[in-house]
View 1 (cartoon, one colour):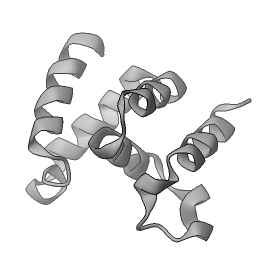
View 2 (tube, rainbow, N blue to C red):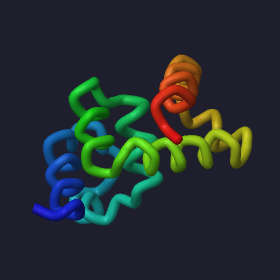
View 3 (cartoon, rainbow, N blue to C red):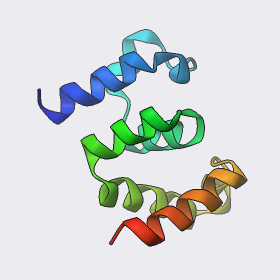
Length: 94
């Protein structure tokens, strides 16, 4: 199974997290939205699957780009999520 299919399966397995996305559009969720939603609302299994599929460094790069882009975008992450993943990625991502 390639990464694209693994991502689709992850989205389907956790489709309740993407309740705001129309069913037809769920397969078109981009990486930015996927990372933001899984980090904010996913459980530890979802986060692990996301990092196994995309790689910790890629997820970290997307996360860091989000929180450094603008105050509006930064506020899309819960405060505790932002703090936790800043610490996590500083330690585990290059």
